[in-house]
Amino acid sequence: MDHHPSLGGRIALVAGATRGAGRALAVELGRAGATVYVTGRTTRERTSEVGRDTETIEETAELVTAAGGEGIAVPTDHLDEEQVRALAERVDRERGRLDILVNDLWGGEHLLAGGSLFGRRAWETPLADGLRILELGVRSHLVTAALLLPLLIRSDAPLHVEVTDGTAAANRRYRDNLYYDLAKNAPIRIAFGLGEELADHDGTAVAVSPGWLRSEQMLAHFGVTEENWRDATAQEPHFGIAESPYYLARGVAALAADPERARRWNGRSTSSGELARVYDVRDVDGSRPDSWRYLEEVVHPGRPADPDAYR
Image (cartoon, rainbow, N blue to C red; front, top):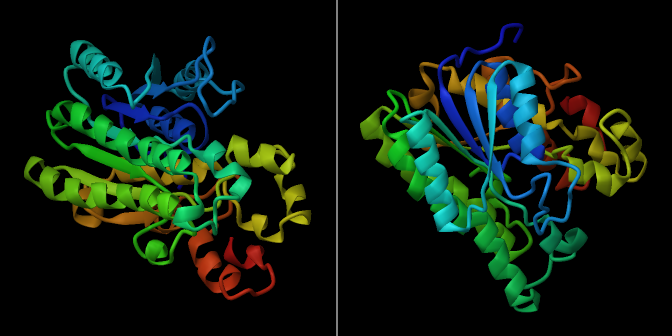
């Protein structure tokens, strides 16, 4: 896609925009011309329980502005109802409405302990960890939706985007831990339910998923950077299918600018790979990875790594 989608004059809010997909989504909406409120818990003064202080919401807001939009950082813990109410009141006071709400809240990787919770039975999972996963991955989404949707339905074309891990089709497979499975399926059902409710307002609700995301945390896990990320395939050959956060973000920005988006997407779940095909977008390296098809056709059957055939 050679041209950028146009979102000039649109007011967006990306909840959970500190890093990863949330940061990229904020930047690409800004690149398309939107004013973007970016929220999260890690600021230049305070670090969240995730424990990374190398990315902050202030930096995300600056990247949005540098891309051509207007980035506004608002420190917010989306599990704190009063903070989210204050956020809604500020957007109402400053803009009077919201056009695009992106719910990208998560921050539970540290509870997965390097993946050790995967494969652990429900009765073997520490209950406190499991419930915290649901707080971070489900309750935060519901608090945010409940308190910001009244602003969103003032838009002439409301768009609610739930960001999760997996699509309805992909998540027919169990996600190897009960609490994680619930946390990543709930946003799909939230988008389905809100699709029914927003239809009366000419709105669209959709759940979106990246593939194997080269987030800052994932790169750090493998000890590589975005510049030399392919070196990680020596440790994990399947990592060759990985995509940058901007791949999903470009697809979502195109969806947001699509006048036919309600007909195409309302109530559905989709992936970065499907959005790339529909809107003719590519990742930062010019490729078009399809992680979920790769997972189904190569990883699950136990076939040798062949990521280049799926890029």
